[in-house]
Length: 197
Image (tube, rainbow, N blue to C red):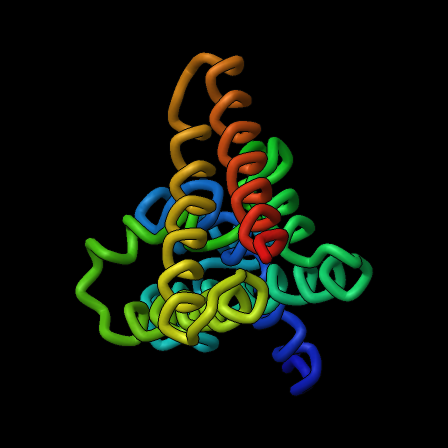
């Protein structure tokens, strides 16, 4: 029985959503096409009717993951009178650390992407970094655009680094200590900059 165009598109979207979660959980090389399609409730044979290659799916999954994370961040910031603190507390959190499948691709896949020789994947990650830097540049303090840009770069690196480190240490107390220390430090430094005359 031939599937309708809508059914084919719905299946494709389901595969991208599944891949967006599983790549963040297991890494780009941590799951193969057959297992990914099985997790999406489909057969392996249908993959190449929907995607040119696994690399093609990776790029689309990374983009989907970023779209999902961006929507969540946008909603949180819109509902907060302290958007910088809201962003930091959302990103640098136990929840983000413990649920990589629904978190930021930078914290879960950036090192994987750096090892892949795929210009489209690098371009996708470059776009994610640029988007975060644009967002942070508008939230951090600084007397000049250059100072705000520099602060945004440092904040982004600290946010990502804290989540990555907290995921890799086996001691849960230390993992929590990393999250709490970095989140508090970032928020206090940002608040201190805004409070200066």
